[in-house]
Amino acid sequence: MTLLNIQFDDIHFLNDVKFGSISFQPLKFLFKNKPTNLKSIDQLFEEELVSVEEIGIDGRVEEVNVKNFSKDFLFVPDGEAIVGAKQNRIAERSVIIAPYFSQKIPVKCVEQYRWNYEEGTEFAKSDFVLHPRAREEKAELLKKGENSKIQNAVWNNISNLSEKHEVSCMSMDLGDILHSSKKYFDFDYFERIKDTNFNAYIVSGAGRTFIEFFYDDEVCKKHVKKSIKGWMADADDLTKTVDINKEDVVKSFIKSEWKEEDSISVEQAYSSDLKNSGRCVFLAQNLIHAYYYV
Image (spheres, one colour):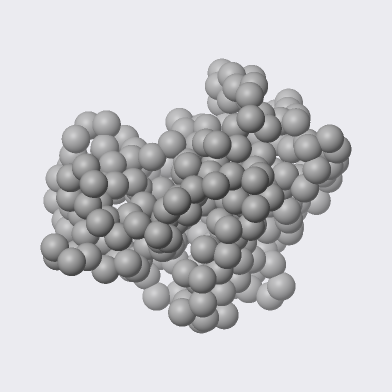
């Protein structure tokens, strides 16, 4: 089914930017019904109104418990990293948790060789997210219902990054690998876009071209700030830029077909149909987050 063509009133193409070999096209989607009672997990970490813990003292690699202490719905973005506890994880998919509610959510390990508490039993927010090639493969496996293959796919992608950038890490932690890889992009690229107001973007040059949308400008920009190091680490060739047909990408996104999936919490979840990989979530029929590989 098509879902996105009725969500937006208009789309503005803003000035594109080059991050080394990465082409970044910021977009502004205009829509009628922006939720006002929804905050990201980063925002609630800053307000000290969320806690994330292992399941029991022993923990479970593929699940953590999120407690929302706020009066707002809590949004956990797909690929968002949390650090600490027994090992660092990323959210397997986007989840929305009701106010004053505790919810177990599916996660994947991004620190393969650690399984012990080091600095307390709770997780904290991070400054990175899952890189594009790994997220595309994760989305494709979710679409096929091959969830049991996702963890190894994530670990293999992290191992490939480590080898590509010749970074050694005892625990094979994605965050450490991305930070160590900064020698390839010392410039603070986010400074070039921090004053631009956008809620979506197209990225090309880090594997397959993709478009991503968020319900809120600031949530979107924070996600981009965390994502840039992963884009650069995933870049096909740091010396060559890839041009994108932004109109065609947006058209494909708007006309895309989706199929409904079982939700984790109060969100309505969908995965892309047909040949393209992607996922999106709604809250009360309002689009909250979507990403789509073209």
